[in-house]
Length: 366
Length: 131
Image (tube, rainbow over all chains, first blue to last red; front, side):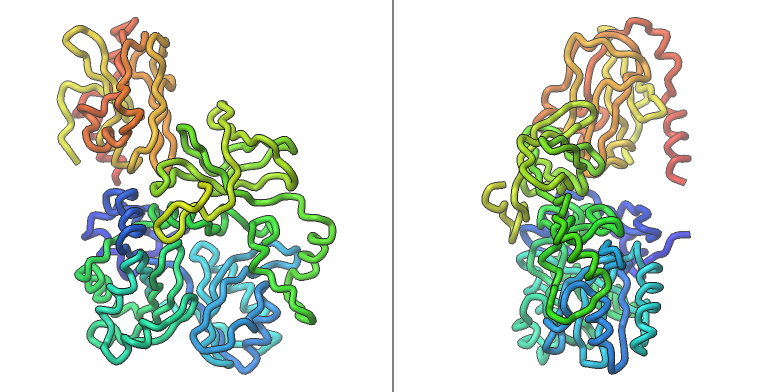
């Protein structure tokens, strides 16, 4: 039996094609994944991401706990509502999950973690939290809707109570605040996303989720499925847990070095392993590839370089670019001319710096 | 789901075959298959003159989601391919049983056609697929 979000019947009524996604019955598209992708790049689209796990942490030692739990430094969060992207590592420096942490107040932080990793994340966090007397409370009573695209914010503003509107209009990137939505429903509005476009991720109590979705639909926001979400985030250069990194991969090897804070005197889980890896030299790197010819790069394809083999991690046709792009993990060093084995054919590809697309446009050099 | 044309025969793997007036066999994928695959972005066509074997891969269609082999419903020689798919693979999404045909085969053994499902049997197959 698969889990359903509170919006399940709403998706079906919109004609969604539903698939099993990490144990959840989710919409892959509502007709055309490519049209949904373009709607987000050019206007505004929305995704049901209620399958993601919201976890609230309570207790006076919560910040101290997060200093220990996360590879990024929670001390970068100084004001209420501010958000931080971080990896949560095991002792070997492997990635247990990637997540966003929000500061509410010193005794209350919120984590949003992946759906497919829910059980192991909760078990790990609870185990580590014990020593800090931090209460770990999952919040399944919340749904989450991501509204993304160049016109996403203005469409959300139109639904907010007028007393909240100026404050939410001023909300900076990677910050969140409470606001009242249609009929006074309580919203937690975060200026975050997974598409490379501006927009919000909105946490809403389950009982108001359908009404919020319908109000967004009436405001002209197009429903978009997980298929479009995947191509959007790949174009935007964002990792997918389980595909681009997992417990056997360190952030160094997943191009997530920018999320590691080796601040003086902070002991966090995995730090010793990360420093040892760095001292010894990181052996594998994650790179961006573009296929200028015909064909599609896919997860699992073999990558051939002058220094040995690698593999395609996330790979897909990129609708904004109208060609295939991918992340690959290859041996560190000068790879020479890179080829990918596509069904027995060795196809030349181009090594690029990603993101591939930002704010609706292909990046320079893609 | 659009109506399945009665003159088509099918493989269980969702390819259709139509016997044209000149006796050549036109091949494509079913409307059900294109819907399952989603937006198509690339079609790898066989070469004209290539020989194909019934039940073996003759072409590849790729959607955003996945790549799928297209099996030849009958053995024979490829006499024509739908070149317009090279630039517009989405034609298959729009008209799977018409403009979205993939290749034309001169069959070497027409009795192989008898092994294929008729439209009713295929319809039954995909109905069971959906449950």
